[in-house]
Every structure is written in C-alpha cells, then in structure tokens.
Image (cartoon, rainbow, N blue to C red; front, top):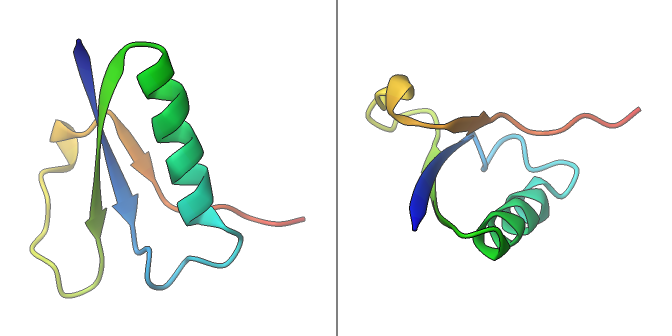
Length: 64
C-alpha cells in the first residue's frame, strides 16, 4: 500500500469553511484508491516540520 502524508496547516485558526471535513473526505477517497493516508497538523507554536517530507500541504479553503 502506498503512503501519502498530508500536512494540515493552522487547523485551529483556518477552520472557517469546514476544512476538517474536506480533509476527512480527501483521506477517505485516497484510502479507497489504495493509499495509506497520514494527516499531521501544524499550528503556531508547534515545532517547524520538514515541509519537503509531505506529499500534500493543505492550508484551508476559501469561500466566494
């Protein structure tokens, strides 16, 4: 099984448009396609991650 790592940026600050739900749907759809999906969260005050070790970096949505 292939593995995909997702970094979810500032979930405590940018959770304005149901972004957590978007992450859950993304994880579900990737797993249905045979990927193991690892979601890690990063926010202000956390130790800086190695951004190059992630396949997807999610920074929230935007409403129009």
